[in-house]
Amino acid sequence: MGKNCFSTVSHFWSTIPSPMSLSPSTATTRPLGRSVKGDEKFLVYAICQLLGWGGVAVFGWIMGLVQRLGGELTHQPSDQNFLALTCLAGLVATHIIWVLIRRGEWLVMSPVNILWRYASALVLTSLVLSYIGVEFFIATPLRESRLETFTTALMINSSLVGAWMAIYFLLHFYEGFHAARAEQALLKEAVTASKLEALQLQLNPHFFFNALNSVRALIPASNHEAREALTLMASVLRKTLGSSESRTVPFSQELEIVQNYLAIEKIRFADHLTVQEKISPDMFETPIPPLILLTLVENGIKHGVQLQEGAATLTIEAAVCDGEAQISIENPGSRLSSDSSLGLGLQNLKERLRLIFGADSSANLKFFENGMVRAEIRYRLN
Image (cartoon, rainbow, N blue to C red):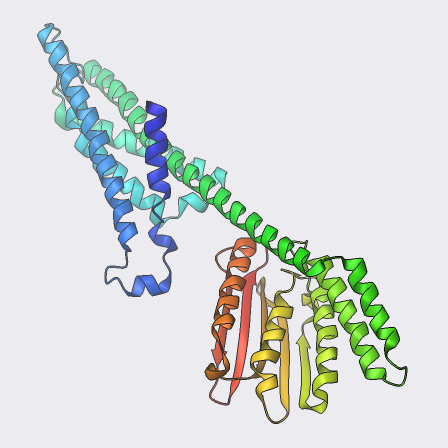
């Protein structure tokens, strides 16, 4: 029964996100800076606090009553309902610890820092509660009795506060464990979906590439551009199918695929398309999810370049700044030229970045008054 109760509380706790994880848009819609689910989580915490310390108080009162009925009138904490009287102080003290844990972000610290703070808070809180209890709630005339009472109170308080902190940390680590498993499942699902898409494209790779070579052989040697376009397309497809199975690939490998793709588009658009690359040397070995750069460039061609009547320039910029990869694709375009598929693709791209590189990653579109559009992605390098 206790195991089921723990699982139920932990599951309910894990379904309520921390206020620290709220998005800026959510925070701005709530004057007090706390979401509805954040209020629910605090309510669960408050109920657990009251029930927990209230239960300890009731237990202390019952034990004191039993001893009085038995005629055991000694100067022990239980005789004077010490446990029940100090529960209020315990509730206040543990709430202060709760505030310190959240404000100090203890839960994201290393195990050594967590243990050091855990031990310090436990010792300090137990000493303060025991001193308050003996000084204000116990009337013991002898020094030896006060020392014995303080020792007993210290043991009781350290047990209660230590158990409270242990349960709190266990619940949050339990929540984090399940959150990590959920994200891992999402990532596995995304990878599986990518593999299925790749399989749908592959059909039979050897047959497909042999067919392309056959078509290329049918093109007269004088038609150099058509033969070159087929060769580049085969190269793009081969590298695309090979990289789709990896979680990340070097940026240089992704850039090579994009360059081959743009070479095909250059044959199509001729002087209508100009490509500029501004790549920092430290980007070439930087990991990037496969086909993300190709997706951004292809969107720039589809929603921007091909809709322009005059010449168009597509600029690729990539650099590492303060441990963060920053990649942008700039091309002509407007909000009117964007359709729903672009927004959906951007959301899928954001989710892939979040699953691989964490919540600090981002993907955004920026529209400028001069008729240019910039797609930007940023992610922290681990």
